Length: 194
Image 1 (spheres, rainbow, N blue to C red):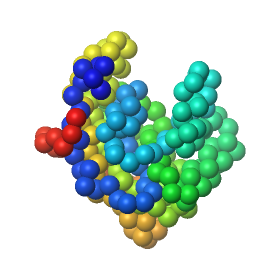
Image 2 (cartoon, rainbow, N blue to C red):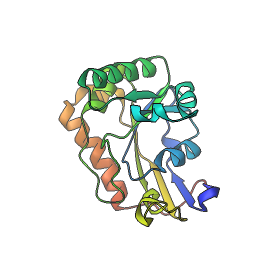
Image 3 (spheres, rainbow, N blue to C red):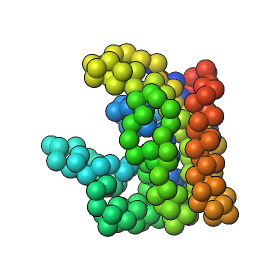
């Protein structure tokens, strides 16, 4: 994050499980993905809206990273993206998803859409919840001008694949969301990286 002159503190790297994992994060700003790509020492793709495919060059990199493109306006496409994501996880690739679907811009966490839990249940991988804060201070809160900010990334305790299977979908979503919200309400101060 040198270009934005932002500082990033990361905690919970010891919570990274071996093997594929579904990273589930709150979505604060446009810098969430660059921050997470630069701080998590485990390769992962992510689910992105299909409009990104129209950009030059970037989609090529995203396909290399095992990203999945989602058309939110087309239910069949949305179901296909769930299937594609399950396939990538079963092949051993980790994936990041923002279940709010849209950026909160530093406001309170939005409702979590249920698709991510279907992906977790169908793929049989653990969920690693992530609480990220401060990214909206880089751009969204400054009329889209880039400013330095203090960003915090907390990798929280994973929810095991077994636990996900035991819980009904609603309870499992509530568990993941509450872990993220609790972490956002009480950010950790120590830093394990930059």
